[in-house]
Amino acid sequence: MRAFKGLSRSAGMAPGTIRPEHHVQAEETRLTVWSYDPSSLQVGTPSTAAEAVSAIVPGKVAWIRVIGLRDTAFITDLCESLGMHPLQIEDIFSTHQRAKQEQSGDLLFVTLDTVTSLGRDDCVSCSALRTSILLVPGAVVTFEVSEVELFGGIANRLRDPLRRIRNRGADYLMQAILDMLVDGFFLALEDASDRIDLLESELAEHPYPSLLGSLQDLRTGLLLFRKSVWPLREVIGSLSRVETELVTADTLLYLRDVYEHTLQVIDTTETLREILAGMVDTYLSGLSNQMNRVMQVLTTVSTVFIPLTFIAGVYGMNFHYMPELAQKWGYPAVLGLMALTAGWMLLYFKRKKWM
Image 1 (cartoon, rainbow, N blue to C red):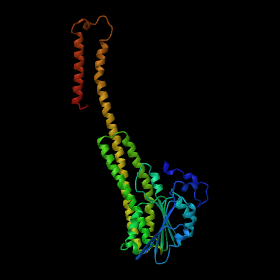
Image 2 (image 1 turned 180 degrees about the vertical axis):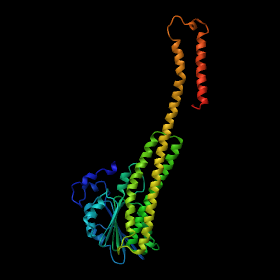
Image 3 (image 1 turned 180 degrees about the horizontal axis):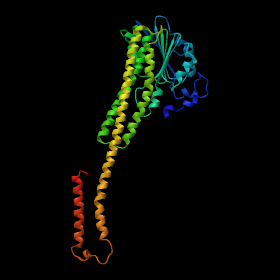
Image 4 (image 1 turned 45 degrees about the vertical axis):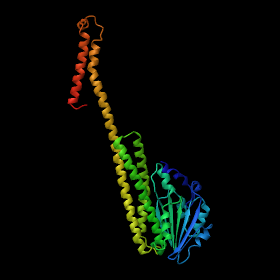
């Protein structure tokens, strides 16, 4: 499967090595810094890693948003300035990395997939929306392979000084980001549910042959979707129980709510997979019934013509002494016998409800 292509390319490399092909398909690297407190908000676009790190000041919360991972040198410099471990830096660029969270000193690192739509090539969708989150004192840093449109909602909340997020710390910002990413799974499930309803209607009206391919594509998409959701459950669950000064007890309550949303996503995913499995079975049963009806018609026609063929074969023999051949009524009598035989058999089949 394409979702697992390229896994062998890391074989033989030293831990912490960034594969050169990781950034080939990535977007150009862009950097945005949001710095805020209850009374002020500044948005900047620093050009160097040092300038971005300088936005982390006491009394304010900084959101350093890195969009696009093409400039590996710049991102590595930024990560090292924040004190990240080389293995964590490698995880940012590894699209096949399983979702996880790590705590080391005054750093809390989370990497996960987010999916907002289930297309035909869902492995690409999952990897393209890989997001890593770093929580440090007074700041949150997000690394996005592609720009996560859902983060626009967080930006709108930050612009409103009356919103709760403006009066909380960096840990609450991290919780808001995780909550927004989990909401993205709901969007994908809603899209999948709509597509299942459409396929279900088409299945009831006319189960055309290509419908099975559409069902299998969606089943594969949900399988890869599930692959991203299940590790997320572990990550959010461990974050809701983490013991660190970086996360306050009040924020842990909100993280538990995110964990409940994650469980709901998993339950919905499993339900949709069961519905799809039932639809595939229904399609195959319908196809089998359709084939049985065709075979029934063909069998009925063949059965009716067997005695007619026998009669025609008997009177088609070239014997010289066949009394019926010399009679004027011989030909219509044989045709009448054939018609009576065929009519009787059709009536018998109908009474037996075989047709």
